[in-house]
Image (cartoon, rainbow, N blue to C red):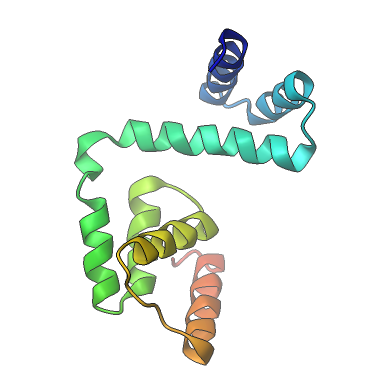
Length: 130
């Protein structure tokens, strides 16, 4: 990482810490020439990285818990647990849990059942119950 990249990252992290995400995205776009979607994703990646860093050792047992739930076929509960522990949104939690499942070669529900579970989780999230 060059000094300029380091400075940009530090400034973006500072803006995020101050709750100024829009300004962070704008700064990223100005400094890199990236499009809006790319800049937003880059800033959110830094934001997620900060959230994980803030979790510390207390969440070091999160992955084994997720793996255990997945092995029991309890993917929705695994996604819910991931969301509670990390504070990410539903899509990020689902993606992370699916990545953990793939890493540990744990097959997930497929076909209609998989779709029903996804729709159910999305509906519950919309109702604030998930």
